[in-house]
Length: 482
Picture 1: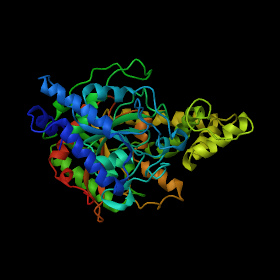
Picture 2 (picture 1 turned 60 degrees about the horizontal axis):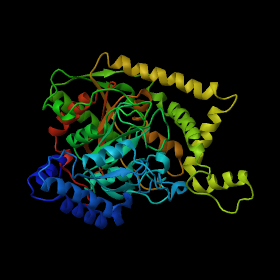
Picture 3 (picture 1 turned 30 degrees about the horizontal axis):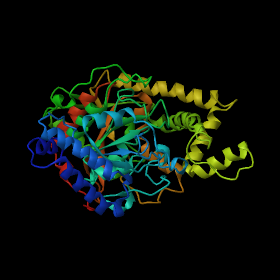
Picture 4 (picture 1 turned 135 degrees about the vertical axis):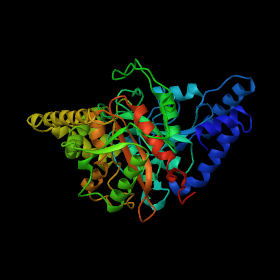
């Protein structure tokens, strides 16, 4: 059921929040042995929240759209009294003493937190294979990955283990798993949603955002968590509209730019063909489609893996075994304790990115690598600015390929990194983008269409996504595991 459907059942007293929550928890119990979407299920906490919602309804109090809605939260977002591991052994038993701003807002709205979803360690990965605890599997084919790093959230939403979920997106970690799992994933404008309480990976790139079965559900959740927060220095002071009010059944008057550089070598033929069919559908809805060049689009991967890893090197320095988290035992001195703690606590991919970032920031290499990457980042941002002078939105594939088999790219990190080639530049530019299901390949695996907007143009990309979604039936298809 959608958010509105659940809301209507609650206010009409056809079902209680407790009944809906219990049904979801039972569903998780059945599906989790197959999927591994959740790292931690908070059944007792969820039922307590549901009882509070039921008490409000019983007393005649009006409830908002998010009250009683069961959801999952990616395990890099702090939740007071609930473990937040970031998919890492170094934070295996870490229980935050405070809620992230988004967690706080959801609790105040009456949403039901079912648990914390699995993710690549510290959100570093594109397949959720880098989690220290388990690999989340794709609900359309259990031999394949669910994408990453928010693979747990995407798989949970795709199989209705929860109605909606929160993910985080540093280089595509909401949109890519949403595409891989056949759901909607939205990365908002940088600063629209507070990062307070989000465990940092790349601070100039990280954003929290919604994953949902439908565009409307994503829009409702976005409205519930967006807004200014004085605790986040990068938070934007802007009014938050009702994003669903902009929805229209057609796109007359809209101009859509097709990014030329997103097609060609490296794109699966099924993906390219399906995206072209989606573009034709946008034209049938009344939009004008034209080709747009973003010449620095192809530099996204090297720029990202210098900037993001440099920021990760700095952010992850705090995990030293002294203040919190895992500490190696029987160390002979402080230096060996640092080394042994970080060696045992961090996984291979995290260590690799820390070393890359430390090297890029080191004396003698800063100008050649990190500084140059920042200059090219500016060129990428300028490409988008020029593009949006000509069109309302840009479109391209969300991912160059569909879900790959578990372990298939494990020995080839570069091949894994290229899975994010379509999404990374959006984070570097700080603009919003949404992935919406637009078809399937010849193996029956989902393909996502990425719709990109200018800064703070979430209403526009959601309008285009909604019109496309409502003119097709792809979103009504359910995965084979259900």
